[in-house]
Picture 1 (tube, rainbow over the protein chains, first blue to last red):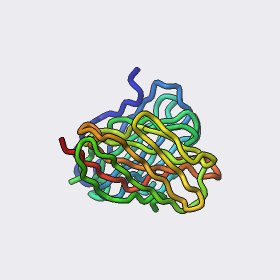
Picture 2: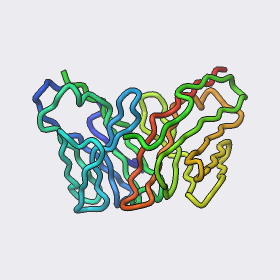
Picture 3: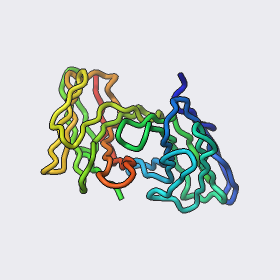
Length: 113
Length: 112
């Protein structure tokens, strides 16, 4: 039972390059989330998908796009990476919303130079 | 903006001692959750307390919630070196879709 799987684990991008972070869960959860974690700032929500077929902006969506490909997969795309997007990105899933705990992936450490 | 603020930001104790960390939040909530993050890893869900509950236990963890003061505390009893981690509170709002808003965390160091 893998839980939430994120790929890649590490990535270095040049300013202006694009990339997609992949996330998949095998718990049949309805809701999925993308957070970024920066030193001293906790986790901030980028985008979320309450259920398959829906996506909504979180607290810090600028510079990102998402796709809920199916119930299992939720990807995060950086169209034109900027140094300010250097961060650790976490994907999470839950049965439905925050009524129960979230399950987190192990994160993607992204550096934009 | 962060909903939860943890206090203290960092805590250093000896094995066997108790560790207490606090969380304050700003708006009405449906529930409050605590998570642990070991260095370089993802967050792990520890415990959830609903707004109509005042205290909850899970093993060596004890969580209290005071909705009148908009605050919660996490007590870890008889700490072990393996408890060394960052601890985050997260709140689920009472309206709309209940996405979690995380605080900035408390770094706990338990020395042998």
